[in-house]
Amino acid sequence: MQRTALVTGITGQDGSYLAEVLLEQGYRVVGMSRRSSTITNERIAHLAGKIELVQGDLLDQASLVEALKETRPAEVYNLAAQSFVPTSWNQPVLTGEFTALGVTRILEAIRQVDPTIRFYQASSSEMFGKVTESPQHEGTAFHPRSPYGVAKVYGHLLTVNYRESYDLYAASGICFNHESPRRGLEFVTRKVTDGAVRVKLGLAKDLRLGNLDAQRDWGFAGDYVRAMWLMLQQDQPGDYVIATGQAHSVRELCEVAFGRLGLDYRDHVTVDPALIRPAEVDHLLGDATRARTELGWEPKVGFEQLVTMMVDADLARLGGGRRADDPVLASSMYSRAP
Image 1: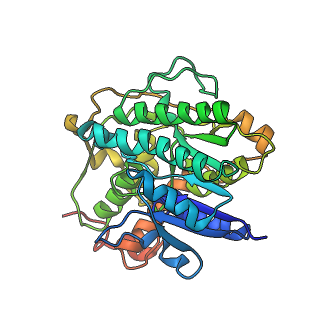
Image 2 (image 1 turned 60 degrees about the horizontal axis):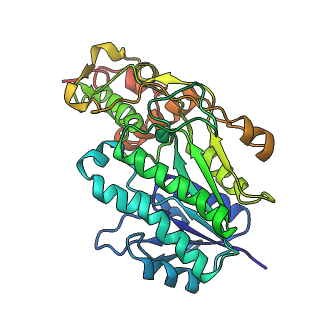
């Protein structure tokens, strides 16, 4: 019989890519979304007619129970969260409700409705925070440096607890930063690629950023969601670091993005102290040996290819379909900021 997968956060970057993978595998895909007067389905608009949507809210236990009863999934992927780290300082309680207690509510709903459901929890490299060793692996100690990171630790450890206490098939993917043209504009990678394009097209004079020396292990979201699916196909549940094993600084990100457009980032990027985190995470680098060995997973898209992909997508969006290698961009009309 056709398996059903329920995906929370399906309207986000990861949810949209995961839906594509699940459809390729022959699943009936149901996305759970909160009731809202604002339509935010642009990332899954191309999947209209191929997926179903059901209302549910990680803040409301009863809605989760009803969603499970209505859809009867074999697998649940919990991707929903308040996932923007800077916002977690401004809204720490809301972040905890969604990103931490939301995991409790959905695990409880699974335990009550159908404990045979396989569950995936989207954990985060931000749990490592002030790292004690590098690279970070599944056994590395957690020292989160933001309310978001703290909430993710709660959700991660609770997933382990329910697996051990109730024998649920509950797995966690400790995903390092993963990006794409579908990433929100508030995240630093899209902020950089969008900002570089705006400077190139004369739509902005400069780009203001925080710590340029912070380093992250950046990969392609389309690669990472396949690892999520693979985790729920194993005989036994477990926790896996998903990463490329290569770290790059925000400065390098700027260099590649602006360089793709024939610009020197040093002429356009300024550091704004107001954008530096209260407690900085300086260096994250993942060791995905277990995922490679047990899941057979490998990242396919490298750092420069990823940044190039994102710049080209933002250029097509803002520049009337142009690409960075378009000779029209060499004209003075498009190569000069005001």
